[in-house]
Length: 369
Image 1 (tube, helix red, strand yellow):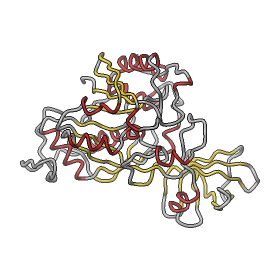
Image 2 (image 1 turned 90 degrees about the vertical axis):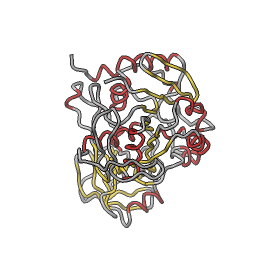
Image 3 (image 1 turned 45 degrees about the vertical axis):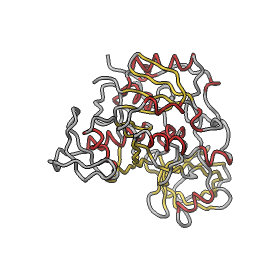
Image 4 (image 1 turned 180 degrees about the horizontal axis):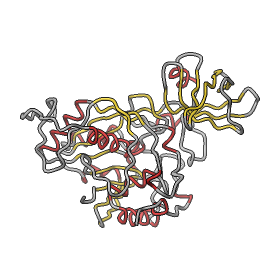
């Protein structure tokens, strides 16, 4: 029978939803899942679960101050969550209000900005800012904590709801699997011969949208922008050729890599392989895996991963625990196995793991395809 939304539901006690980060990033727990084997561990011990020659691929997107509060012309309260910047002065955003704002109306945001509503674009509103939208959002906006964190962002969140390697501004939610890494952990990984490479995927406001149809074939993912640098694609080719494993840090990194593989072309690459420290462009695919090459550069993805998806690039996945009935839970079930994830989540709940953005982590081995 086809899978439905109900296949990805589970009961979670509210007290297991982490409302704040732990004092230290790498102090989280780590549940290692390899098929039917489950091991309770600590994230600080991650290097022992990896091997020299493996490559971690991380999303270096930085969270914008994308949440702005204010009032409509009529005086009604409004909340704006910026989805993406269209150009220097225009942004797409979710707008919450008692009545939908009309085109031509204005929103007074954070008692500092008069923003014009240009119209609708699907589920989002097109808003014109009085100047450079990115600069104004960063200056006047608030860090957009997820809706299941029942408090406003405060000063510590400015640091802890960003990864230590966050660089490229553009997300409205953190790539949360990366929140567990600190500089000491990154250094230990490098000293263990484990490589680190980066991609960029700007997480959009649509990441908080629920799946509204029981028939999963009818669900349409929100589109997110990404960049796969040449140096990262080259590093992946070298690692695969040498028998190493690609470890995606977070579902966002995985979606970049698998999207780039689907877009890749089977062009004839050069025969030579160089060292991982300085890989050449366009490397021969010599590993015993799918014959895929990654499409390098900027792109957009609406990839919806459900059980049955054929992974071409990622071998292991570091991820947090995800919401019931969410597309992210479907993705990890496709990667680690639906039955295996059901058992793992039941185990995590019984063992008191902390869930969601500020919660604990999992290290998943890809189930045989």
